[in-house]
Length: 305
Image (cartoon, rainbow, N blue to C red; front, side, top):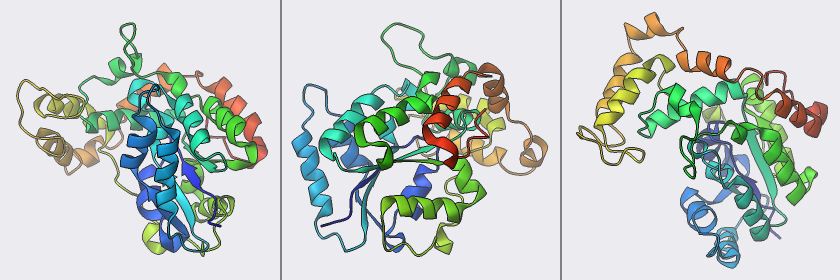
């Protein structure tokens, strides 16, 4: 029998790309059996009246074919936690779909202190072509029926509690990005033990690096204005197109501003973080307290304030 399936559901901006590209690899005892495309097509995208659990199970089954002994089959896609630009709507539905697809799976939920993840989410919003300033972005919904940013998406205890109810508490592992930063080897060893891989022999040297860092926050006002002149998923019909989603004025502005002389002069400016700290002061305290009670003393949440 193959090892039990591990499903990593996100959150966004919690080292998910690093895990997908550098951690969940055969040399660490994992084999990714589906990517974002398969997850989107079979789990996230289907309308509620058309979702087909049998087709999704078949997709997982194809991925399990030929799985080597000791390798943990793994699916990692942060879109399963819901999209933060649109309030995380659907995260509960995706959890229930996963239960119908792989009821015996183990679940990994990666989180990050809200005061750090929210600025990172906004910078990702800019990277995808967003044009709103951070105050407007974090203001959330502006009209009935249209989804936008919602801070309750980052009340982690709610999603953790749901997955524990669906899959059982012992089958849900919460990994903080802070633990990876403090002691990457120990955090990954704990994850490998939870996943049940027998092939994990330590983190490879190639995996011990930062993956795909964002542009600095002080560049945000320039980046969002540059987005008015490139076609992107969030701005598909700009008035004037000077570059696609991967380049043009956005890349030019970001590249210039992260270099001399701007980097040394502006490195200490984090305007998005400053706004988040003021705007959401105390907002997540109750949620983080509930999360701490759920997880007990084994997870350090001292930075979650």
